[in-house]
Image (cartoon, rainbow, N blue to C red; front, side, top):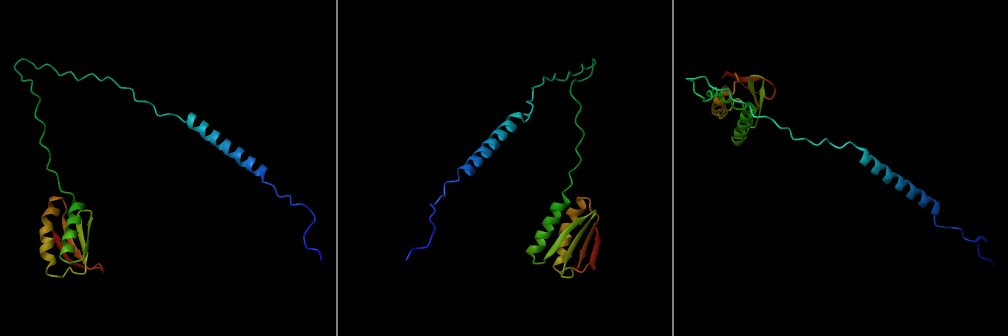
Length: 153
């Protein structure tokens, strides 16, 4: 009995052609990237500019040389968004789960606890800060959108 198979010798060889093709493509990519990196425009270096200091005018005889005092700065208003965040945090501490939002010139508090007696002192405490920030109304709305309280600041 003879064993099965072919009488031809095994011709499997290492894929030399495929390896050469991969090497050529890789070398081409490296060269291309190198050329592009060299030809890319470099940011212009900042040249120091010489600026002459301003010349102060000579005061007329009998006038002082002191500069006039700066105008008084306008008082800085508190940030309404920071106040809203603080109010939301205070309500959370009281377990009066709410969301506080600044919309235009009013503050809206959405909560299922608007009718809760503990809500009024917290809102009263925050009202002065919102008024100082330039807001005009503070509303407490149920989750459905029904207005429970609406007060002027």
